[in-house]
Image (cartoon, rainbow, N blue to C red; front, side, top):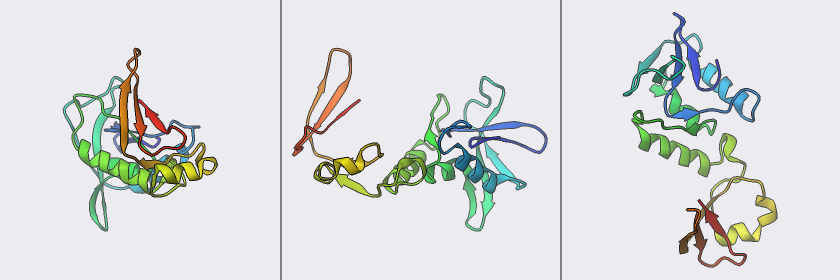
Length: 171
């Protein structure tokens, strides 16, 4: 159907657990759909359920596995590893959270898919040295925290040590 939904031979619609791929017409939607199709189309799949079996649309919620030369692989995780899916944990489901977070971190660090073209982990100095080059890019920055403050609106700001321009992250 798209990057995170398949229809089984019998007509059952299955929504992949713990991920969300871009909607049709959005950047990377075609790539996510193509990878999903390549992995599962006309293949036998194995489904693993979590706590909640169906979503509000009646779709079966599952971890979808397909057999490859490497053995059985989880399609949900492959989409994250390829940088074509974000994480979406909706309680009570959330099994394999650590594996999903590790796959996302790997995709971001290696700049796969939607995570941009800037590979590796930058220091604050590296980032500030090429600010114009990194503008509008997703980058991973390793920094030493100078201070953490929270304002009256509950927004948290983390300031970095050694920043020439006042580099900070707001949550």
